[in-house]
View 1 (cartoon, rainbow over the protein chains, first blue to last red):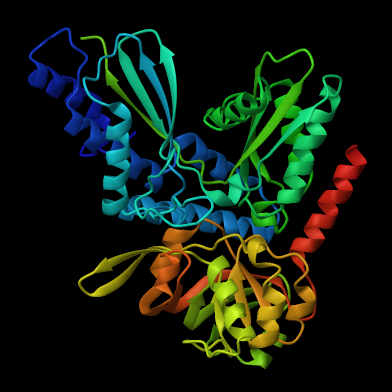
View 2: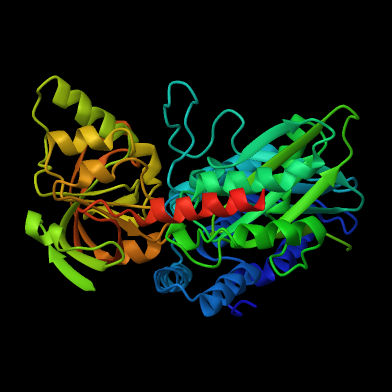
Length: 306
Length: 191
C-alpha cells in the first residue's frame, strides 16, 4: 500500500523491537515514550496529507459517474488536490481540524507512561513540524492556544478492550462539516421520522459542509452516546455494504441533487453509516454527524503478541 | 465560458460573467473571514481608514495555514472557508467598499441583491487547499495578526487562481439558491 521507504509501513515492527530493547523484557508490551510520541506525530502527518484508499476510491467513483459538468470539474480538482498533498506531504485542507483520537487499549497493555500527556505532546510536535493550523481556542474568550491543545483537546475517546495491544486512530475534524451536524431527542414513537431528520439536516447544510459527504448517524444510547455513535460511524470503510436504513437514507440524500459543494450533481453523499445502541424506553436520541469529502483518519497499533 | 481576469477588477469585468462560468484570477487577493469582517465593519462605523484597500478588490474567505521562514511567510495550505458565516456581514461590506469578487465555498444566503452592483461570488472547491497553495506565489503583506493566523488579513499574489465557478453573478442568478430550492422540493415530495 505504501512505498518501502515509507516509515508507516514498518512502524509496528520498529516499535515492537525497540520496546524490547528499552525494557529488556520479552513479555512486556511497554514502549518508549519517545518513540510513541514520534509515531503519533507521524500518524497525524499521514492523516492530514493522504486519505484512506476507500475514501479516495469513493471520490474517484463519484467523479466517473457524475454527469453535472460543474460537479465533475470540482471532483477532479479534489483528486488533483489529493495528489499534490500526498506528493508534497502537506495538509490536504487548511482546516487541519480539531484533534480527535479514538483509542482502544488492551486490558493487558502497559504503557509505563501517561498516554494522554504523550498524545498531547505529539499534537504540539505535529502542529509545529507538519505544520498544522492552530485551531483550538477558548470557547468564550476565543483566545487561540497556538498549539492545537487546550482544555479537553486533544479529545481522546478511550475504549477498554481485551488483549495487549493499543490501537490509536487519529481523526482530525474540520469545522465546516462539524458545524452542520445535528442532534434531536425524538419521542419513542417517532422512529419513522429519523430518515426525514437526516434529510432535513443535509438540505439545511447545502454546500457548506463540503460535499460529497460521509454521513454518520447514531441512534439510541443517550444525548451524548448518540453523538459518539454518529462520529464513530464516520470511521466505517466507505466500501462497506450499506443495509436497510443506511441504503434508504443514502439513496434519498443523493436524490436531493445538492452535489459537490452544493452547486448541483448526483453525488451528495459517498456513504451513510448508522450505529445503534439501546436507549431508555422513554427516549429516542438521534445524532447526525456530517463529514466533508476529506474523511481523514488513520490508525496505528502498538504492542502485540510477542 | 472561461475567463482569465487580472486584478484590480473592473466593473465591466464582472458584469460579463454568468453563473456557471469558470474564472481564473491573477494579481492580488486578500483573505478575510469572521473576525476580519467584523473589524472592517467596526472601523467603517467609526470612519477609520483601513490599512489595505478594498476598492476593486478580491476578498477570499480563507483562514490559511502559514509558516514563518527565514525568507518571510510561506503558504502551506490555503483553501476556502464556509462563506455562510459571513452572509450577514457581506451586504454592509459591499455597501462600504467596492469589493468586486468574493471567493469562498458553500455560497451565501441573501447576498445576491447586494452583489448586483458589479460584484460576484466565486466558488472555489472546498478543501482544495494544497492546490490553492500552489497557485499563491507570494505573501505580499499581513494585517491584523493579533486576530490569529486564520483570522488575519493576508495579501496574496496569485497566478491563474482557480478554477473558480461563478456561483452568484452580478445579475442576481444564484446557483446555490436554485440547488437549495430543488433539494427542498425533493424533500417535501418525499415527506
